[in-house]
Length: 427
Image 1 (cartoon, rainbow, N blue to C red):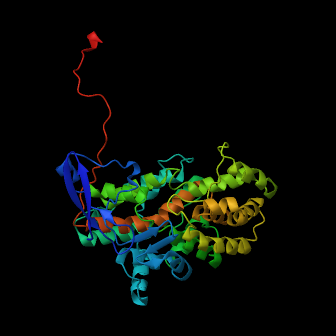
Image 2 (image 1 turned 60 degrees about the vertical axis):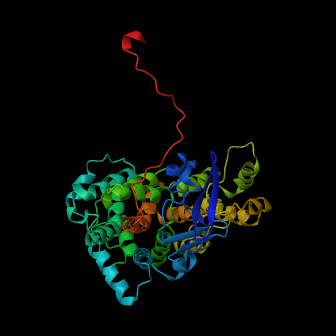
Image 3 (image 1 turned 45 degrees about the horizontal axis):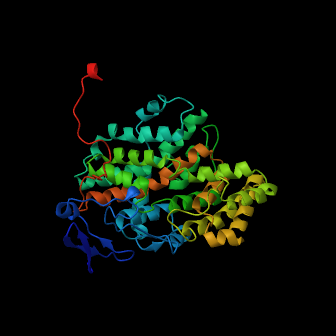
């Protein structure tokens, strides 16, 4: 606690405590505001409201900083693995070799899904969007795993957390396989978390699948970079659903539904569609001119970020990774030439530099995923797969927070005042 904030309202002089975190802006504690003043605050989108206390992730958008449990995202993406980051988010500290080995084996043993879930998939149309399938199947997990839905039992919370992290790649791969009419592949416990997902997605029963280590590492980095991102829309949705006491599978399904929105999880798909619209490098000047024209509705997708007012720290890692993937796959598609030339312009053109419209993680991840072979319909599914770790960690933190209450935002009502019902015959 630091100083107090003073408020003068309707003749009353009131003081509210100012809370300080270990880093970041101070927060005015207004929990007693309504009781003392009969007034609410008005904050559409809750962009100036701290909804909780958290020790998981810190973002400084102005400085381009993203920390998981204090560790910079760049160091984690370059030096760590997704399983190590998952352990860190769940447990608060980086694991030693034994702890990581135990955690990795635990997740691996949970990768299979209930056999009846395979028949559940057949209830969807073949052309169903993979996110629709993912949302439905994850929500249905609570019907198959009754022994890990008691949120008041710490042991069940741990099991549910492990199951969600472990089964998400399997379900995501099944959603893809179903959409293209190929048979499901069972997990292979000899492979890494990411390698196993690649095999289940792109492998077929008729022949062995060799995991490309360059692609495996690229996917692992993408998973790390999307693991958690503080109190964004989908994470807030998971916490809000969880605040009612809903089971963890239902909470994560709610997060998936929110992530599906194009303003949240669909940014990398939008960036790739923009590159396709441009088509070839010779058309770049035309679109750069349009982006600078205030009267033209065209916007460069994948540049700038709502939170990061400087360079997106996740994009730095992706900038290197995209070149590694292109070199390994010997990419010659004009689409990727467009991406690289756009990147060069955005990093050097005074207009983009002044407005800080730098390439963000969505710009690079969409290009990489397309080069690997994922259709755009799978992009948000992959985002959900990675973000499940963050959602689960945030949900666990919320459950054990002594200040946690059921979410209940208030409103500024501007509809009709009370009026009497008029019978139908008199209207």
